[in-house]
Image (cartoon, rainbow, N blue to C red; front, side, top):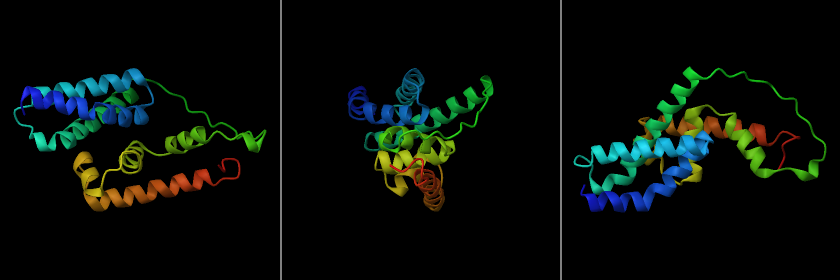
Length: 161
């Protein structure tokens, strides 16, 4: 990959990768750090990267950097998880985005990433398998289970959209 091809890849795919990472991490600064790390790694390895596969390479590197970031933060921060009681004051004023984000947060990191890659970014099962390092069957099974969790959460009476 030449410098020009690298710049072209950055221009074409930076926004997509950033949105994917931001949706998974939820923090703009963290997403920017992960994205920067992915671009840095691609720059360092640009001689080995085939320009035709730069998108796949970039998403794969970003995905792995994101997983590393999540693991690092889990080791560093102490979090207490509180189970919030469901409060329904007015069923007419549901915030769809809030309900969907809460549903996504019920998923584990891998399931959330798979849902984002398939349903938000539109990747095929094979492309997702290449990005995540899972095989295609695992991708399908994990996605199915994730969608069941999402459906179960979204159809609860207090969350019906």
